[in-house]
Length: 77
Image (cartoon, rainbow, N blue to C red; front, side):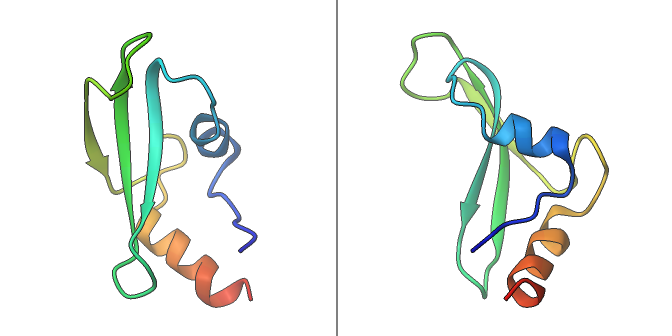
């Protein structure tokens, strides 16, 4: 699927390849359950995140992430 991001800031943070500092993770549970969006805290050199929490809205543009990405799967085909 060709995903449209809600804003350029969300995309740039999500696609960071470094595993240190704060990162965004999207877990896709399929069309019925949707996606889970997490902010995670990575220590340099760590193989697992130090902590994290789920988010519902984009921290940069304020869009409801569930609604935005659900609309991509129904309208983008």
